[in-house]
Length: 362
Image 1 (tube, rainbow, N blue to C red):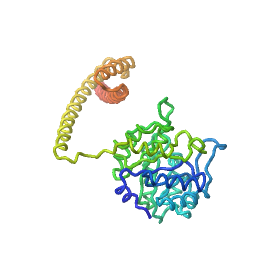
Image 2: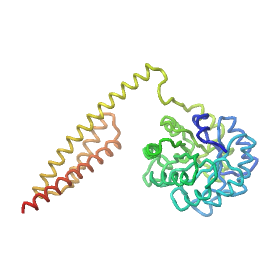
Image 3: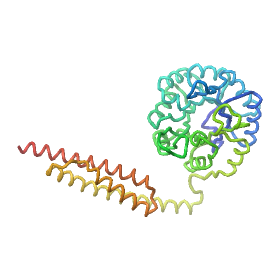
Image 4: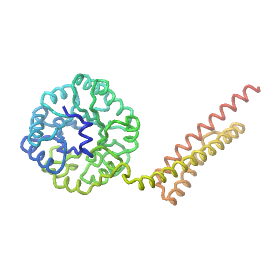
């Protein structure tokens, strides 16, 4: 049985590639061999595809598992597929699939996750868990924990982006901060990026490079022998040639400098950052002290805590100031939204204390 942690040590980054769906035995064998020659380490292909509409292609099911395992044997590489229920899991184990992945639409359902986890008790197989469709780190973490509690030791997370109603350049917004939060909560958990599903098209170089720069452990990319005729997700699958070109262009950077002199320079920068962070905290503390004074003033003069016009003024002036200083508007807006929230809490706390004090004096 494959030890995913050992595989990740040997292959950095781990390159997972293959078609969205397994569409035939001969086609899959051919692309598996080509991907192996291109440098891929694991073949991915879907047997069952969860589709939004019933008329959409949903995969060839159990018979596709045989195509996947045969392609892996011919190309001499491990294979993985998606399972969405206990029945799928049992079929995949019977067929000899090496690695399982849990799709985003399954991760959202703790009942299904628990059923799959229960069906894997006593089975030593790697399980990769994609983030849920909605941006919920605890739900993602919980799904991984359910497999861990069932005795699965070889676990990894797949970051494939999150659905959003906001207009954006990606099919699924990356929300890198959510993946980083999961890594903070589970620091030993390998993290794989799925740029194909984040982008929703073949322009995946930027997202792939960002993932590598963030020290992700691998990339999971959809590659098809003839994307134009793919039965699912045709718009986001690369050709083998495009995949090879992408790998040539990506830069794998080291985590820390190996040269002691360069490491010392980096440490100097970090020391300065630490000093500035201390200054930021001290300034924020002084700001909140003034907020508490304002809370007392508002309580004594019967003035409401929330002043929408003042908050809009703060956002407008601070975002303009931020742009002048090479800070993005989104960063400033998010930062001052948090500062405003804490300021309101500080004022509210002071006003409550003032009211209790006034009540006792009466």
